[in-house]
Length: 307
Image (cartoon, rainbow, N blue to C red):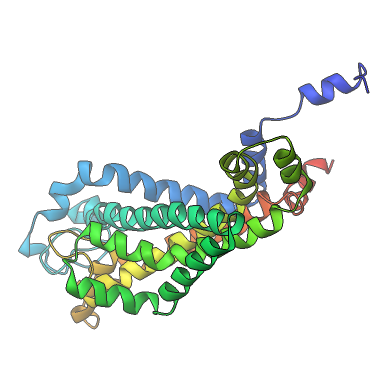
């Protein structure tokens, strides 16, 4: 059917997908605040060590366990000082890099490996699917935190080892989700049409199936980022995560534990950073689940139609 003159402006005025997503994010104020906070955390992770590393590591015993909101000591002591007189605000900003690096590395590795295995298990032969699913069952048979504790006791508690261990424990999440999605999508008409047209298996998987599965996996990855960050903080709190002189938020909470009755701020501020980041990730994940779902997206778009 040919386009009429009245149809052309409508199609020309269709917003870019990124513009549409930005508008939907603007309408959800909680998700917008969460996104802005995560951007601040990301900025601290990228540039914090370069700008404040010297300040965060410089000891000053005169400022030992300095209380928060002491304006006379400068802005770096707004959140107080630790047991060695180092400013907590600067250390929290610097510690964001290791915390975010471990969580991002583990989520990215588990997402890529789990999705690839899930696509193979869902679309290829039953033998490959059986082998891959049994591998996932073996990994899931061990509690993730317990498996990380056992492995890190045998390996050096370095950043790389921590990323590998946490990534292995999260692979089954993406593997099972991707496989379940593929088993349903492979029977749809557009996949059958691509197969009839002679498209290769690789092209069908990565060109036709993966774009449909990706929004669900990205939403899970956003939520899983918070879980991995909490797991890293738990391992650092137990003393088998990243070791000094490196620093993470979980390690800062652990270092402040002996002073909870006399200097509560040593553990409170890094713990608050963990809570706010986790909460922001959960809020953004809920928004993404709605924004990326064509069936539910109208809930965010309906506000634009109101006069």
